[in-house]
Length: 292
Ligand code: SF4
Image: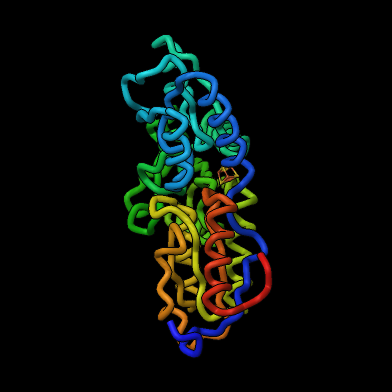
């Protein structure tokens, strides 16, 4: 590309972005164990291809959390957590279980358990089939899992309704759905325990601030990462053009034509080095000389 044709823009990185402490700790534990002995990861350690690739390079195997068998004696539960039933099932099948469930996912489990014990009909605001939601509802199959008004319309409800949320849902969506549930069941006592985790709230708030400053946002993260997709979706709702990429090679220079300020953020499963590569690529592309 002729240097005169190069787009020129400033690159602004969100105040909060990228991998959270829960996923970082799980990866550290997984790498340590995989370098010492054969281990099977139950599900995806992080919804990110570079993390998955690194684990496979270390020889780790992958099986489904709710599957029947694993090729190694050691198995590892990811930061997304698991139901007590699944944990017990793997142990009773003779596996040694390393549990890297994030403490904030544990808190969501405790909140749900407490609501059920207090007689509330359990509701999880979250994505049907997501591994964290499957873990949350695995011990309470009667729980309603809702993420839309249509799903709320199908709920049976009860005298007392107890609601928690998948930790990575945008809090504004969760609060709107809680209001909708309360409106749908005006005679019910509705209790909501906010289990959306702090790193998710920080990244969602930071993306709102970012969209006020820039015209286009690059969201770095795995295509299968729920919270990365939520960040991309938030940008669009805020009227900011956004593109989600897993690596710099996916970026097209024409995306920035006519834009003066480009923002970067990343989901809670995206490693810092993936973000750094994208920021360096963008700064090279734009001749923005600020180091990253
Ligand atoms: S996204 Fe939140 S709940 Fe999930 S691992 Fe990270 S800190 Fe924990």
